[in-house]
Length: 142
Image 1 (cartoon, rainbow, N blue to C red):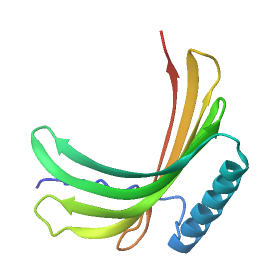
Image 2: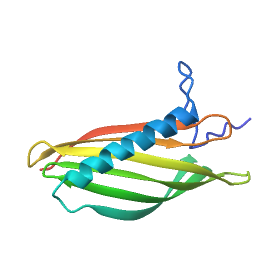
Image 3: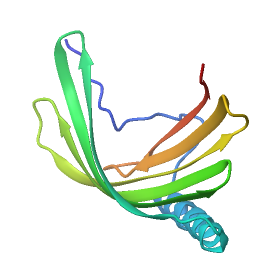
């Protein structure tokens, strides 16, 4: 029996995730970031981001997710941020595709000329529960 992992499944068994609360938090976060951006003297702006993420196990295709997001990005000096969201087409291998709602909010800090840190929180709705993801990292330029 072959195990198929879907890209949108992120399991947090110790915590029940409720879509309404997640969307409320995303909207509040977006409003806060937008307010900060509007107060910032730096030019920021809207953008469109279409992205496909596909998953494979060895040579076997597991499925893909294609996001069609509209977003807003900006920053001030060493700080940068973005918030984006929109429909996501989820296409598991051998199954019917479906549309979900997905989004991301993230930011970065350029601590020095060579060293920076970044982070992102993402979500996607689902049939039963929403899935969430995080990304944090540092980058050093030589």
